[in-house]
Length: 492
Image (cartoon, rainbow, N blue to C red):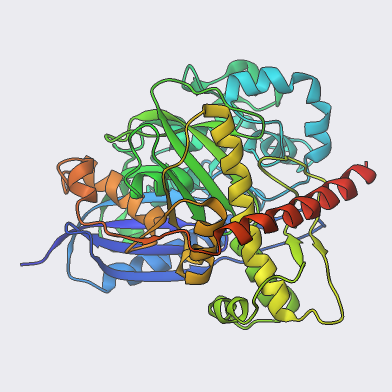
């Protein structure tokens, strides 16, 4: 008998992954397509929204063709703050998508500094180009989209764009987790804010309906996927990973090492008090219902390795980095602050840029590679310190996922830096698994969240005898970060 399964679409910053996940948690088939990155000016990052849709459909069809399972539902998870505007009738994008990494609205955010506290109180976010509101405002003004009739335009994050295309324009919707990243959403009322839309000159009629993450988002048409598949799960990528790791109870936390690094802690139904440098956002409870979470966002993590590969050409693949890092006894004083698109938590400095310090005649590519890996661990420790300070809740362990967690050296180094165990799941693609779980629970494939997570296993990395030595190296990391921040301040 064919197995029951769900299709998970994980549309990320550098590519789209599609998995067919069986009821017992096994991945029956998968497919992947890369997404083209566009950098029209320094600090600007764009995607072709039409290419995203085409490559998503291509990957989904390949994954579906790789199994004879009965696919009962579809779940979508996505890069979050990236925004798209399209024509409601033709479903054609009116401009390239502006990516979450894009810094073009830094000056606009600086103009809003006097309203930063009010914005943080309403949205849980800091006033930074990272979030969608100023990107959408730019598209409507400097991007030239005001020439179009407002009624003819629809806007949304990538999940909303994919839903619109897959349903042939029948559904214009998002979920609470994605809405909470736009800076147009009232985090306490859990609804779009008229005042915020007015502040950012965004007509509310352009925005999608906001729904719970596990539920009805229409039907993906057979014209695209070869069969009609109900869309039953939608969630932002980091909240999806939190759910996929089983962190749906207050106090549970995970870190995702992807293009960036994102640490989230479930805070339950009570809005937590966020310390400086942390965000308050919306995540999923066990039924996909909206709950609060604390988040720390590091803009560049795995993307630093991608830059070493594509920008400098010093490695051919990320898999080479583990051996290069192990080839050195220490970093020998070389640190890399990968602020290639500014610094996120806990510093939030959009003018910062990548900084390498401590180079000598003896420095090699191994030092740069190790410094890039160490930066992921040191940056994670910085935001965890901020989270512990703000909540008073200490971490007993950290669950991890994302492509970089395949690097055993990095995972051990992270445990040594933190001084607590790091737990890696058997399947590190928990972002896609989270979307699969939410869709499967809504469609009845799994009875509940506990049924969904029952098959998950974890590999622990305990702190080693090198932990005290590694912790001492954080002083050098702190000096390097202060150097990057000083560079940014001098530029203002």
